[in-house]
Length: 468
Image (tube, rainbow, N blue to C red):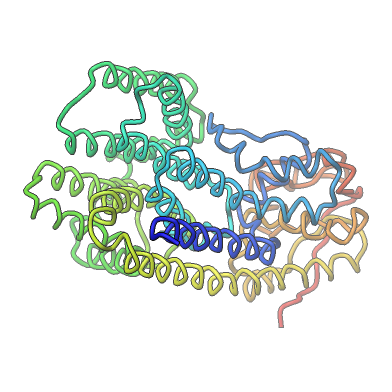
């Protein structure tokens, strides 16, 4: 067997083993992977039997395709929830096939696997975030650019579709996309003016569309840039905060930081000063932007994982194409290094999953207690919220509704916290005919999919404590 064929078999075996392992993990953790927004979107899809797209982020449809299919063909709720957990595996596998077999770019295939693992911990258990899907598309876009796959009409159409989808996936994706276009241009030192004009028109069209269709949620996020009201930027002038931020990045973004340092050093050795400056400016620019608009903590959270996802792409792709593909790292040594990094990250998923599994077990205990009471609407005991449920989030009513329905629709319960009831004047709005879908959203009892759920008439009843 010649070396090329052997290398191809090793590559395909290793990468497909990764997708097989992640598929098995998805099935094992299907109950845990409905945290926060994941529960909201899954429940919306099941109830409406349709896609749930918000803020023009139509890539959300890709995160909902399999569970929606399961609902349409009448599968059980357990099967639908398993499909929901498998959905991102299938999505990323589709991108992998596009990269390896259509673009014929194994480097992009490896980069897609790393994008799924680097900078991700809690997001693994809420696998619907648009920015995760959008940053993955950047890998394919950069592969198109590096290989000059933007000349034939088919390639132009595909590249534009990828760019449009990425831009509308999350406003922050614009930053790494602009960086990758510039970084590629300064590598080649030539510009196709027709292509440049196309990009300019695309960005202008996206900006105008977003400006016209801006939602209240996005307006609120944009207001964080108002330094007259938001004083988070002042933290950057305090050494203690900068030291905390440095430790945070070194702890949770170790690999992206190392990739950034390697690539900048490589650019300096090659005397490609502009590319080194671009990489440095965009890398630290993302960090500054996040900390001007938010106050970071010393521990990783689901929210900040999403915010820092562009950082992973900015650090990863230049390294993969400038260093990984040019040195001996691309062969056995590189393969072993990538495998070790991926195995380490998967182990972190499993380790983090222990917390989510313990949380799911507590919710099951809470659900079992509620089911014994009869009825469908309950409030968690204050003692439980202060003890073992102190991290109960706004998604608790939806998570408990989904998990309880696994026992049968007649066993459905939805459990809220006192904070849920006290917010938004909910106590005055609630009666026997409606329930809290989530803290800001009241629904009529019958506004659920009757094939999976049954919310019985009645008022909210406080449960006894289950924490011991």
